[in-house]
Length: 219
Image (cartoon, rainbow, N blue to C red; front, side, top):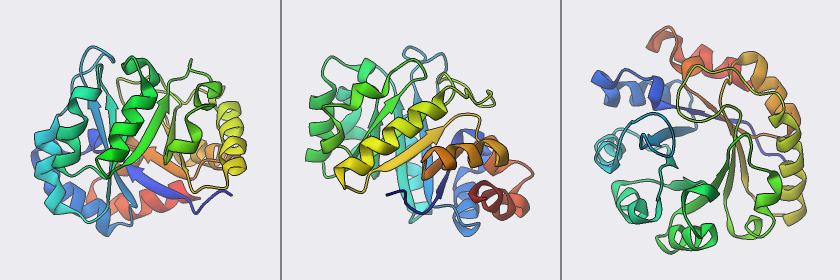
């Protein structure tokens, strides 16, 4: 059953010189999650942040800290991000030799486990994982940089995963990330998404506009 639509602003688009204030502002504006994009310049062509930044921003919000690990290998860093304050840790099947083992480790750390599928990764990858995870993140752009255009072929994948999730009867977030704006958000929600990651669309215009930005994504 599709849940209430939640919005997860990606701090990649925030003002990094004022990150604590930015996160407090998006929480006040009605955000549901804080989405943290961790990139290693190897698994994806960009380099962002590590556990120290997650630890630094944790005291600034009571929201769910949704940490997307676009790093390879991911396993050696799971403990550090968990200790830094992540609530959800999301990994890619391609980022390590044993995705099920990665999921087990995240759960053992007392965190929610997510699996992210790149645009070329099929929904079928979840067949033997879906019963063990708490979140599926569908990438609607190729990961690495903000500001890319939504890949519409991913809507069919979202629909397929929605059916998989509903069949389990479990509360599993179906999150979509990449090119999300007021228009593509509607298409993603119609396909079955219930968590929207948005960087540019959340943070545009400055703090005075964050509440309206977030409301527009919910539709």
